[in-house]
Image 1 (tube, helix red, strand yellow):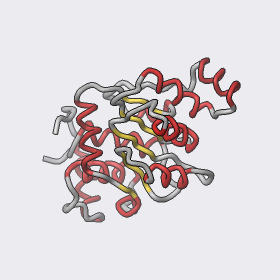
Image 2 (image 1 turned 90 degrees about the vertical axis):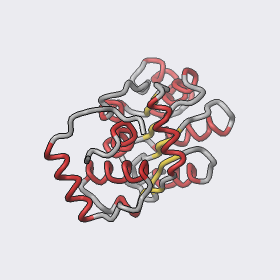
Image 3 (image 1 turned 135 degrees about the vertical axis):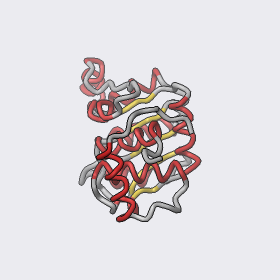
Image 4 (image 1 turned 30 degrees about the vertical axis):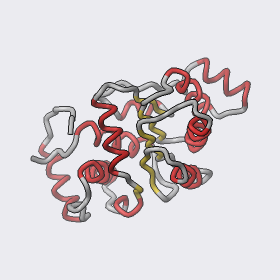
Amino acid sequence: MAVVKRAVHPIEAESYRILRGEADTATLPPYTRDVVERIIHTTADPGWLGDLVTDEVALAAGAAALAGGDPLATDVTMVAAGVTTYPATCLVATPEAAALARETGLTRSAAGIRLAAAAHADGAVWVIGNAPTALTELLRLAAVGAIRPALVVGLPVGYVGAAESKAALRNTVLPQLSNRSARGGAAVAAAAVNALLYGDPLP
């Protein structure tokens, strides 16, 4: 597993020891375990263990894409900010996204994803951590062959459309990570990416 080498703070190491006492992750395959544990560590919520829907092969493909320097594209700047060791494309705040949203009726997040797709058609890791509409647009682009992702991290949050968009993702053959409930968010999505970059923090 190619991972980012970094110093692990003693507090982080102790947090992992505690979470492993609260959530039984020992039998999970390695990439799945890394992702599940990083999300639990980020949220202090062992309930994610039963909510996440993982695919070890898909996560391995995403990790390989990142290790090879393939693009990372996100729906919001908060996700990009949470992935501190890898550059991300996020176009939600650009004038072009604002103009496209006005012209088409898309949300800004969905417009940013449509614009990013033009630059990253093949092999990118796509991370949706906020807007269900961004995930819906990503699925539309994939369905028409405009993008061929290495991995889709679909963890948007909200009462309107979040659970439904993630269910729609699971109904595709795209390499993916999602969760069943309406919860999610930028911190959780960034945690999933960081898990693929960092690996297991404990020796």
